[in-house]
Amino acid sequence: MNRNLFFCSVLTLVCLCILHLSPAAFTQEKPSVTLATISTDPFTVPPGQHATEVEPHVLANGSTLVAAFQTGRIAPGGATAIGWATSTDGGTTWSHGFLPGLTTGNGGGPYSAASDPAVAYDPKHDVWMIATLPIANSGETPAVAVSRSTDGGFTWENPVSVGGNVVSSDKNWIVCDSTSNSPFYGNCYVEWDNPANGDEILMSTSTDGGLKWGAAKATANESFGIGGQPLVQPNGTVVVPIETNGQSAFTSTNGGASWSAPVTISNIQVHTDAGGIRSGPLPSAALDGAGNVWVVWEDCRFRSNCSTNDLVYSTSSDGVHWSAVARIPIDPTASTVDHFIPGIGIDPTTSGTSSHVAIHYYFYPKSSCTQSSCRLYVGYISSHNGGKSWSAHTTLAGPMQLGWLPNSQNGLMVGDYIATAFNNGVPHGVFAVAAKKSGSTFNEVTDTAEGLTVPEGGPQFSSAGDKPLHNLSDPIEKEQPEKGVVPPSKRAKKSAK
Image 1: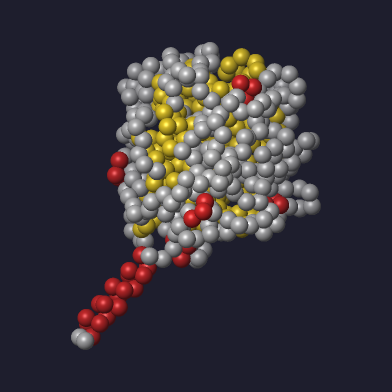
Image 2: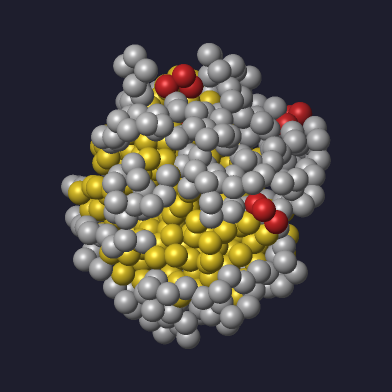
């Protein structure tokens, strides 16, 4: 054989082998990114489990990033305070503090605890907002509270109430219409559910920068669900992906005057994550620059016998018609890796087949572990072409032992959600990272990764040929709400494995 031909053949075989390696093969070396801690828990007041920070969300506008998170997790529900962290230089430096007038733990607030922070920005009124769930040891509280900042996210007003006082509410989220030519520019929308009525879905609208909120409105068929994440398309249509008895979405085309009945995105097939960690198939949602909606969740349909979870997604241009469920090829389907708690972000300057998509998530290398043997990591993956192919994943943090995590009414906790936001083309995630405890004191902080990109070169992976293998699912447990009563769920029971 000609020597040049021989070497070309060998090189071709090597390249083909590389393209079929697991993404893990490209992440054994130390990643080029670094972690930065943006906040820690300074409190010592009971009954918080200190020092812990969990369940962060982050949003970007221009060069500003604002994050919010629970600080000092209280096991039965909520946290000692809600923390915030703000950067005006694209995540290079951060200022941080705690929302005033909210909790007794932070001083000056009426509520025993608060939970479920989510961030929004209203450009029409130039207001940043953090929506939270106020919790009292007894009695009723507002369904949701919204704290406002009019100076770019550095000082925060005492919260205003959304909805009337209630015994129970859960899983709030907030979004504002930020498109200047939208007919509802400046409208802000809060979603939550009412566990006292079987997780009835409710929405409220503000038109004045979050100072006043309209009466709570149900969906057209008074549906039940949990974990909705409203998004506003450029034309003003609000799309709310949410977990019902599957993954669903409902919409409003009239600025929140009324809300449709949910339509089905997909059924849910999920493997129960091991070790008693708090997790589940709640959706994470984001828009591309054209208003196409992405919904991501953990799912086992591509894994033999539902033995572990991939991250999967579906997309829609209108919130009504949804694509077939696709797998994100983080690891081969024959691997033992279990993926969960995703947080998706999309560069708003990109769209369609050119969308830059980034996802932070947690994972176990081995799904069949126990509380003592499970090792928890934070991962990152991206696509530069709207999901046609995906980069090799990067491990950002870990290994973490589950004994380093605080407890909650639903298990050991890093959060029900995390988040990714793009700032000038750069993806930024916020996530809880735990280290070894010092005696009974925890060491769980809010971190972000510096130096992430959405690479177009290097190994790329596709799941285009992957097909669902079965209709199996572990039972999806009814989540205990952060506050209030826990009646029998009115939602349909999930199929058992």
